[in-house]
Length: 335
Ligand code: TYM
Image 1 (cartoon, rainbow, N blue to C red):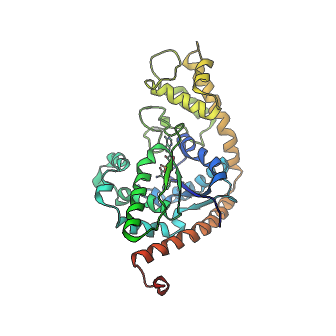
Image 2 (image 1 turned 180 degrees about the horizontal axis):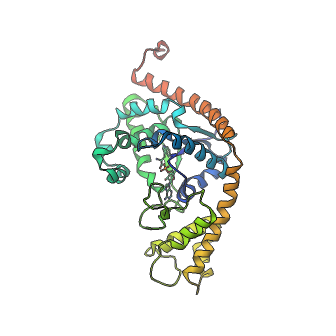
Image 3 (image 1 turned 90 degrees about the vertical axis):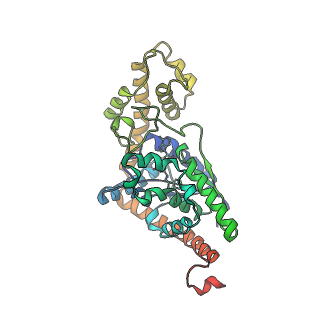
């Protein structure tokens, strides 16, 4: 058994991942693999809380795994698996549903945001329950650290509440995890509307840069990105469009915001955006090459192995939960 503390995170296979997913989450996972026993999930049960086409979903699951691998997750050191391949996630979710209170759930802002689109009457119960399934994901693995973007802060907070409440009611069972949210990259904003986060479900494709976008599309999207009417480049909270572009530049290129501002002193947005497009394309091309070199068969083998590893940990934890709660008809549970 590894001495390292455990880390858990996941991404929904809902279409192509974008720069926000990479900069807010995956990028941080790579270095964390050295210090933690890392478990990375493809959360397909979360994806079906909104309508999905089964064939597209199947392909998206493989594509997300390919991004994990191409970005540098090492399947020999870290566990990569698909959520629905480990039954204990849905089982523990049900148990935690009985611990979560309506008052906890009604505070969840992401449900409000997501259900606004269709109206809450038409939203699935699964969408409402999304944060409890996320808590189950995390708590099954005695997770200490959850590296996510800023938009997931409230969900990790709920996970902590449920863990503490369960432990108090049924005895010490769950590790209370903490979110690891980096100040840089925690919220990459939409290119077409820098007041809202970059999102896969945005109405316009000019909102995000997908990790699979071609160089031409990247250039087009960046040239169209919303800035403001001031002609100079400066790094300022009150200039969200420019700030967001400088953040992306800085995270991918390694230069500080100040250095970038100095580099474009006296130059206009045309030059700056061309420079940024260059940096983004330079980052994406090798990533895309690595993705193309990983076959579906290889991905499936890695995911199968991952599900076995994750399943062993999760089923042990879930048995422990059943025992704590007096559930089931297993004589071993009485011993
Ligand atoms: P998802 O797929 O919506 O997002 C995956 C990760 O990407 C981050 N992210 C962003 N970071 C910065 N800027 C953005 N514009 C941006 N958009 C997305 C998210 O914060 C997240 O880290 N509910 C989770 C999936 C999940 C999960 C879990 C995560 C399910 N179970 C257990 C951790 C642990 C989510 O947001 O997926």
